[in-house]
Length: 179
Image (tube, rainbow, N blue to C red; front, side, top):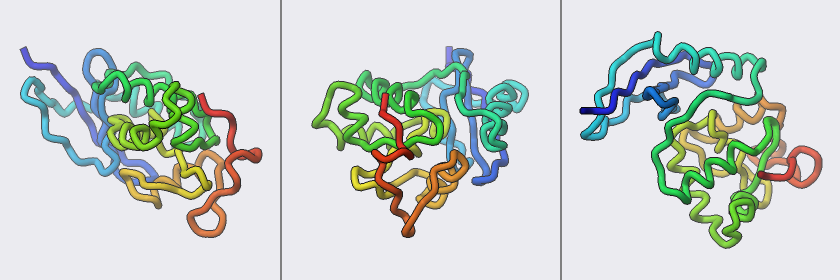
């Protein structure tokens, strides 16, 4: 029996997003609103009604009314990826963290490149806030939705860019200790 995935597109200040959930929880948030290719054992059904609770939280976040998402998640990934994603969820709203700090937080201090790859594979961006991860030097680094979107999300949370894409020293007030 195929896994049923309900999805809907949501208009936000950073563009159209696609959200998708199984009966266990949110499983995808596509930054550019594109429908991913379903896996062999999945059936995707468009249903705004099934996604309404997730949409409400997402829109409240964009209005500045929600700082912590509390929706159920159904994330498909390796144990290492899941540890990275859990560490991302512990980065407070309005704070940033480096890849090296995430690697340290999960007990793999040399795995900062692998942490970067886990971030890249994050299936629910924004909800699992990979946009809060910056370079060790405080500079913005890659983001699936583009650096402009990353910068917009950080500004929404009160983190402001200086000198183009560089951020203030991430150990001085703007950034709190990572998970």
